[in-house]
Image 1 (cartoon, rainbow, N blue to C red):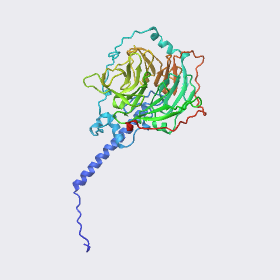
Image 2 (cartoon, helix red, strand yellow):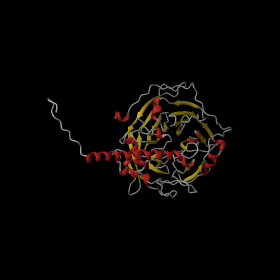
Image 3 (tube, rainbow, N blue to C red):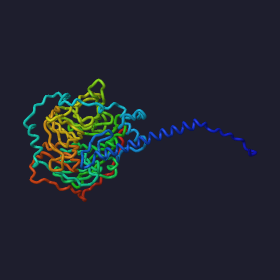
Image 4 (cartoon, rainbow, N blue to C red):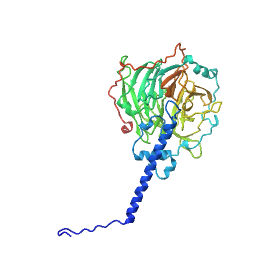
Length: 467
């Protein structure tokens, strides 16, 4: 003992305490190691079974529905464990998700719909098939009325959605791979490109254009929307200048979104309908940016499973909402002015050979309320009557004229032509053009270096924070 210093007695921890701590450490290490091995194995399996350009790649899966989603996922051990628990339910015994996660809800994807054709129809309006309906297949299969718009062949090019500005007959294309929006005229001439830092960070996955040229974009990965409002100073030399606004934030309350999917704008009143997929609901937003109604979707069953809307379109005559739901294998009808929770009956579209929808990721309605569906998994376009009965389909897998590879978004022009994002072939295809084509335009579009891609300084605000 040293004089002047107090004696210090150190108690050694019992051996059994050290053994328990070491055992806990090894147990946690083993669990984390198992998680990482499973994650790597699942990634390799997905990569092996979904080669881009040679094999069919599913558009919809548990964590999203875009090919390059892995680049935009949240990082961190908590996010990895959360995703693994979603992919392998058995791991849920060892890990409990956060209480606010929408994945705590029972998903309607855990059960199988009744696969009988037209077994349940929510839209009760009786429809009589016309001669025009019977001639649709001939019109859209006529190669003299098909036009290709080949996109620039970048490795990242991945067109996923499209919208027609009907007043000016312009095509607005959403490319998630390059994170840009391209604007074409109906003949395929590229007129403008919306890009930049804001757009690259936003990663747009859905698009809709209002009658006045207002552009709405949704981001599945950033859980919000962006609005591009045409500037009052637009002129012939610069007809694409915008003010930019942000709508909503990530969350589960009003004016918040979680994995927003398809969007559409009502031509009659300018209201915006958003498939708030991760929250199992549709938000109806006024032209002023305020959420007026929320439509929550549930299966018409005793258990009332929540259903997630994927793509959406409006029928102007019957005033119904049409939605692709779940895994993209069924649709449902919803009265347009629904407010609150509603139970719906999934309707599986089946052709004469018993082939249904697989990973459908595009939806549109024409002026006659007929329904057009991009059947992504089967590389075709399906056409239905306004009440959801199968009429015809066209297209097959391939890269030739009129052939498709993983078609995604689509829209219908005022004269009935169908504009499709042929994602796997990195092009846009127009079917059933009103005028006969003397020669098919297959030249890649070139971006004009003289096009002014600069906008006025963007004004960004958070809608939820201003209310």
